[in-house]
Length: 123
Ligand code: SF4
Ligand code: SF4
Image (cartoon, rainbow, N blue to C red; front, side, top):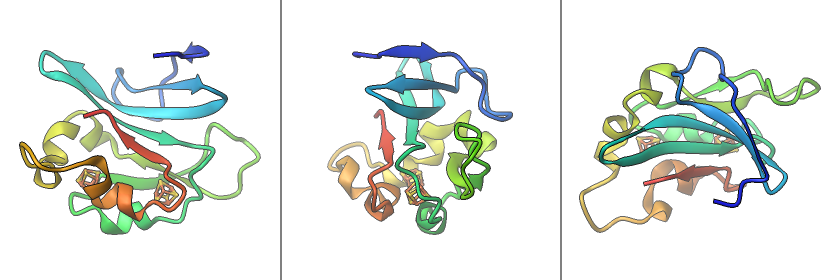
């Protein structure tokens, strides 16, 4: 995976499998879990996120919320995060956006809406 370093860290009250990491100089907040079917994580690049709130508006499932940026104590703007209730069932929350076949990450409303390309999905 090419991680520079892993910083195990809880993000707010989100589930224990959610963690933050430094990868190639960027602080990435990962929300989700791993199970027998695969890795189901939404990753938000907290340096790229401007806190514009567009992902909050377009997500039909209400997955995102704006929170204080705990990765940058000097930040004045909030950043996007995955709400706790969705992080633990993210595969199912995103189900309506993800048919079994025939979609790409670029088709997802949240990815399309995020101008600085701060959102990634692992599946
Ligand atoms: S759309 Fe992108 S930049 Fe805007 S709040 Fe969401 S993650 Fe951050
Ligand atoms: S894929 Fe759909 S449901 Fe999942 S976070 Fe993005 S907009 Fe929301």
